[in-house]
Image (cartoon, rainbow, N blue to C red):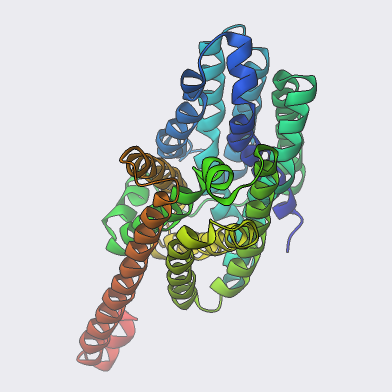
Length: 401
């Protein structure tokens, strides 16, 4: 794999750290600013909304800019946002800093996926995408726990300052290691938008929303589930999230390796297994050992879907995949927000802390149905193309191919 992927992974590590570390620092931030925990939750909501809307916005703004330069600009925006968060004199200024940083998130992963895929041979695209996303998964194992520890020990402002420094390292790495890849000739915004008329692109995005939504339906409420149902101490939640992160790292790497060989079979297996494991979590959550094992499996199976889904969007969007790739990153966050809301509804309805696991299982099963539908439509279109091409004279048949 090219060394340039390391620079992309470093940027992804910083972005993953800043996205999730705030969850462990909400009490400290809320206390410093004198706001309630629910109000401090705007730091999470604002970031998620910024990713959803920022992914297409920043990608559209960057359509005329070379991809390497756009990645550098996005990392610069990320650094500014985190510095603003670290130095914010008031709560709402910090919210602004979070939103500014989030605007870089979706476009960075979307454009970065395209760049990573262009750096390698066609049969290694998913592996290259997975290598970049490894930075995001490792952030959950290393960056988030360390950032939380630093924030609780010497102050949350130091954490965000360190994340900004990570962004500077990522920016320097991109500037030094990522080559100046030429943009495809003749590709304009209208070509990027045309990808959304492809039903296969839309189905892949819907699978992203539902499949990863299934993961976050359970993980969003992991703390009360593990402390009230499994019997873990409050301090154990951090290490349970580390286990989840380790599962993510493994699933991402395995998914990246297998997706280049068999994209759709991998989706069938990972989504069906994810639906089963989430359903079983309603039972395994009552025991500490089985709960811990299940958390690892959820992380692994959930992130095993990321490389194949991102690769499928790139493949189906053909010569203009950048905007579709970025919007698919926003789809992950849409799935997170949707599943967290649905999980909260079933808990509020009095169904217990394990009820979100059923929500997650249903969402993952729905994603599996869409995967079968996508494959069926692809086979039908392929058969129709073969029939049409076969009925043409030899010269016209060659022209069609």
